[in-house]
Image (cartoon, rainbow, N blue to C red; front, side, top):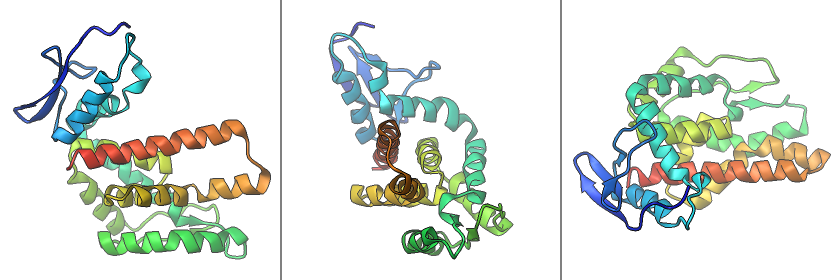
Length: 233
């Protein structure tokens, strides 16, 4: 598609901020007004439109796609989104460790346990660690606490946390990342969530395509963090 506009602007409107193209307000994929909660996020969306050349590259609209998802899909049923996120509590990567006699277990304890312990203290929840591959559900009280936590979020925060949780296979990692304003911490959290994958790659060798996929997922995780930060600042 050829670029069909010249001027990109940001305006404060009822309910938040909105990007306009030659004075026409941008809408979501489903036709809703694309109104976001902060000027910071609106300017990130505007930058994507402004950076287009003669032809529009749909793949470059990372934050627009996330905003559309938050508005069109998540916001209309925040309870369902919260339920989907809480389901990760029973399978969170950081809670499932190798058998204690395996070398990987010691590394997991070193890297993961401080993150999990800090999360428990911050969120006032107790979580069960599991060794081996057998599933063990979390206590109902813990699940209820996490559900309340997600239930208090708006659609933008839920959308970003859903993206981060899915990418990291860890709601602990997602919520911890969402709570920090340090990009360095976010990189460290992603590295922690990727510990097992990196361990296996170091053990069995690295594949170029697999490395590219890992880099893509790391970039997606960082973008989701930028989205949630911009939506609340």
